[in-house]
Image 1 (spheres, one colour):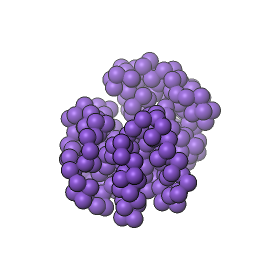
Image 2 (image 1 turned 60 degrees about the horizontal axis):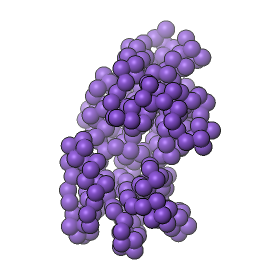
Image 3 (image 1 turned 90 degrees about the vertical axis):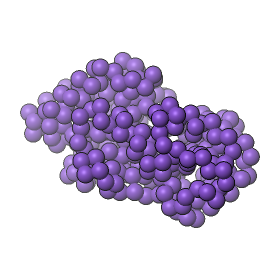
Image 4 (image 1 turned 90 degrees about the horizontal axis):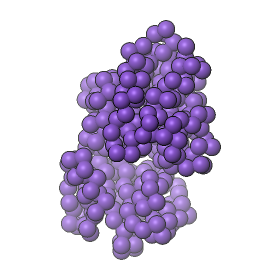
Length: 274
């Protein structure tokens, strides 16, 4: 039985997927993951969170597989405490992001390094709240020149729906060769280096640990999970996901509040592993 499990890689998003809407880990998820891992299954997390934030949830699970952070910008091996892959926004990209920031006066900009969150100049409610909620390290940069260069794993624009839509359209129309971007809520747009996404990172991770792509599975709930769901052989999404995300899934689980990851593990075991 262990041999069957060990050939499988299962990757989960965190917010609204592994955790419920109150950021708690449902007990049935914990039990199912423990059973899957104890039987030799390979399980890990793939999140938009930075390393400090990701580790809070990773360490609850008793797993050892490298994890993916900042929506695919990096892969971290917790067993040796080392980043094994990191693809930050280029210096040219940094200048363009700051130009966009200067053009949209009411936008808020948060820059995510691997381990530190940088709040850019103006009152940055979004970045401040997410930093304080998980007690994460952050730095307020009163001038854009104070932002460090070369570490921008991702950036996040925060604003009204209309403002975020304008920034998203601008990036798609004028800078599509430099960036990939996606909504993580109606009010937040995340931007990464071109070619960086959860899907490419999961594929790279499967190659690093030697898992056949035919036995890769992933579960998510929102638009930053699209590339991951398109890349793996067995995609699933949570019951509360938007309909266009559900259309990408082989299996639609229960709502995340009820233990979506446990539901998906049960599905994989019933239909493929056992």
